[in-house]
Image (cartoon, rainbow, N blue to C red; front, top):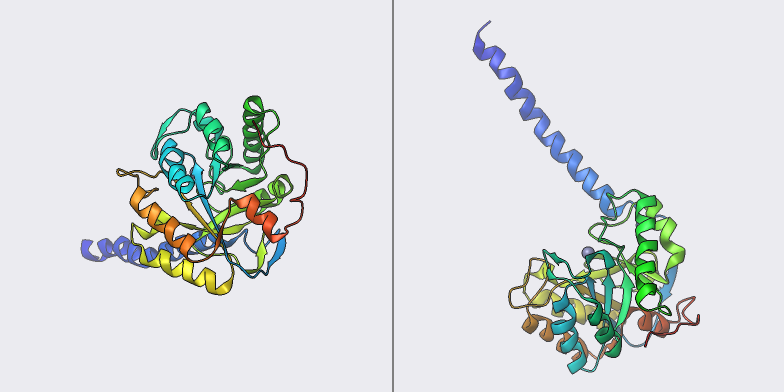
Length: 280
Ligand SMILES: [Zn+2]
């Protein structure tokens, strides 16, 4: 027996195992992306005359408010900021995160605050009980600053949720937002609404214009999401020029531009009439 024959065994094994490994990781990615979307649904029908568009920011970096929020305000509209209080004042991949005074500005400008766990916890990797605790901690941090405020909407950080996580947090919020690069129309799931992340287009405006057009034709609800708005934005954000172009095109499409909870109210979603005192 030559070394050549012996030597071919591991090579052959690697050759055979590679596609299997690829297949396994593709199956596992597919499972992670879709596991929760078919279960523990909170169905709600979107049928309306006029399309809706919401602008949302995750984490959230200061530039999302000071630059992105200023663009929204100039255009006479408002957005939703999904906040992780554990990031307050920190420097992260998306730049400097919000500081306490920013929240006053946020409410003054008519924006909404949503929950994003206390520390941007990965919605798939984090055990459900730790994840749920982080939501409680985030709420505690909010009420320490604004005793009358409450979170009514949530966005899943980093990944789609584990099915059990999705089930456990459902009754804490009127709606929860994921990703999926799509708009919401017809029978939707209030526990996992779709959103379109602007950064995924890499500053290419055409797919954004296309989804705004399709949302208008379908009279759907398109929820945009992103992070930092800056000339030197991270891979998770976009430039002020690009963001403004999106806002202008969204307005010119004839859609109503509303923060997430206001959009839910306009759609007549259950639970929206509950008493709520905005801070300040
Ligand atoms: Zn996040």
